Length: 328
Image 1 (cartoon, rainbow, N blue to C red):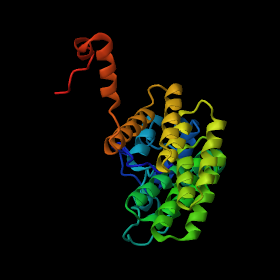
Image 2: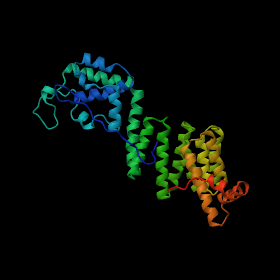
Image 3: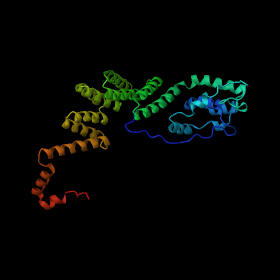
Image 4: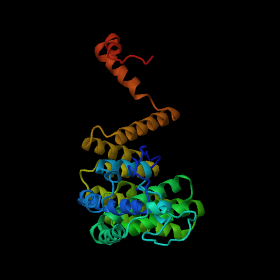
């Protein structure tokens, strides 16, 4: 899914790839091939380090893999390293730029083993590889979106959806990007595609808060307010214990001028989750707006009325004794 403001990426570093000699394209290819197997928790480290006689320093633990993913947005090895020299090249011509020195080229046995491993990965690690690729493209798409490069972001999000069609967040990110593009260009086609992507997201995750919110806003801005209310009302009915559903419906009521209904929905959300920060913030906002409105139209101050009644019942001293201290 697209983040509202930012995405934090932890920093990390790759350990040295090979202990006694510089890494070669063969090593890079092996590392790339092994990643899906590590993801599937296979014993690639023990099998390869014993059969291929590659230094064990090349392989890392699953914990290090997770650190590398966070640090590099899933790009563990630069693509140029893998593609600089074809694996198995046995040309004996003079040294050329980008050519691997002879003493660092893999032997025929290792080349055959690497080729076999790459083909095995297609079957053994395919299920995890798609999610791995989709997450990387999604992260890059978020970066493009934050830079207002919406066409590039949309293309990356579409590629992420192709790699992982069941991921609701991939559909949401497409919808949010098309929604932003529609607001800027006023193109009906973008709005229609955004609505379709929102609904596809909700088909995969019926409780996707951001998708409900985005679709309701899209419908309301097209003058389809009744459809927006019906959408959020169905969510409330389908999720009777969801505070988020009531908060989003309250926001729509607030934005369309239905303040009492909005406050009532926020109070319902707080009855479900008394410490919900979004509901508490919304309630404070609604009551502050109500107080400002009362002051503008000259309505009597409710607090002043309460103090007057308390003074009549218990005396002025008691009324002031119960008053909270003034902020400094």
